[in-house]
Image (cartoon, rainbow, N blue to C red; front, top):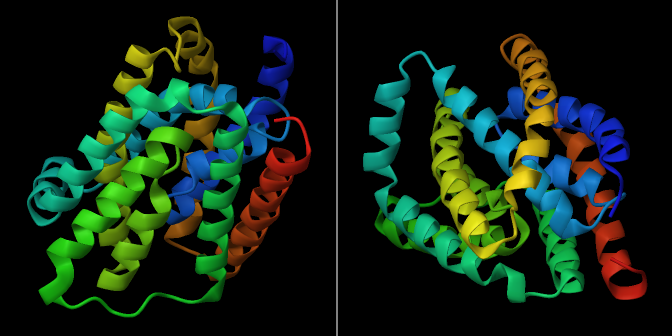
Length: 255
């Protein structure tokens, strides 16, 4: 177990950077924070430390909308199939997470990060017609819940689905904020019950909330003024390297 001071020294800049990415494009805090922390500490410890700051950052993202209650109402109605399938899958899998070996968690985490980066760098998915929308919501929710319950990262299937629906930037940020806040709350409850997130770890992770929100404010400031296309490509390239390194650690090194 890495000492808390060492984790703190590593974690503060990590959460500032991860928060900035989330502030800019609406997603990426857990992917970046867990991916970077897992280069220095165990994957399961990294996941546990990210849960509480992630919950607060997602809640802050929802509150930063012009009409938070209207956004919650719209997302809840429009994406009810996605929400139900995602929450149920996350809750069930989170309870089973302690039975999954750490090496497996590390490999799944690396595979998720790599897949997310490759898809984002490669191309946008084909447009999704209204005819298949509910089916796609259910598939994205179940896949996201299974991956998220184990690795703490469930954005890839959700982002692929939302990209296929071709929603605009503002609607995208509002939608993922609501979806991620609710699913993070479910995940945190499941992890507390299953023991993956110990109360003392949750308390220690409170120190990472201010740097995460600071980074979010920095990223949000640039979102309205600067195109995030190039920056997003750089971030996804970084994700790709981190994901491949996590896979390497799972297959050939100690997790």
